[in-house]
Image 1 (cartoon, rainbow, N blue to C red):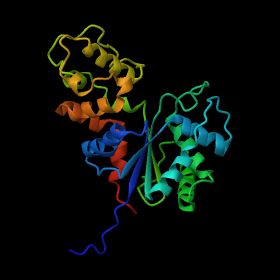
Image 2: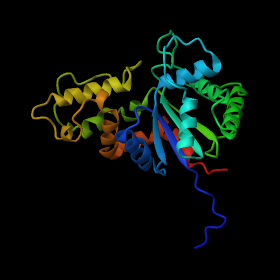
Image 3: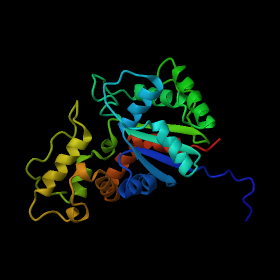
Length: 276
């Protein structure tokens, strides 16, 4: 069958906050896209906020208090393009902690997004098309009277960087007490000692703190629930393994809540949009 006239499939690479390893690649590259009904990413590259701070310091001379010897995120993007070319990058990072964790800076999704595109637009490391697209995106954002005044939805296209700021962090996607109880094998059972009570607190602690306490409380049960044969380490040491387990064991109600989360909606809005 002829493929003439069909749009070329764009090669999408996800840059996700975290360490590049097989668990990050499986969670972000395959299982989360499948959960959301999206095509898998061509590859996944981990990065940290130190790379964002380094980009800001190098390209904007911002007075960050955070000390870093890392290269900038723009440098990582350029290096990945040289390794194996791709068309579009998606950058996903946690809103908290703030980029400049060593200062009085407070987390702000809008400010983070502006810093990302300003760093890319001022970069001397990116190929011309990528530099042009970042500059266009920055101008669009700065032209808004207020952040919600979006004229159009950014789409995956050659040379674009799409942003996904996860508020407050990735673990918020999985913060559902009933869903976590079921995944840990505790549905209908007496809750263990030190089970967290901060699921719905306002203001709430970081979701990762609540999830970590729930996992450690369940670990204290004797005999230990079977789920700990699948993931033996605590959340702080196996963030992506626990993310995969919670996704894969989600009850129908937990699944609906994950799909309705702003991070899920943002990814589907961006990546379900047809290329120009």
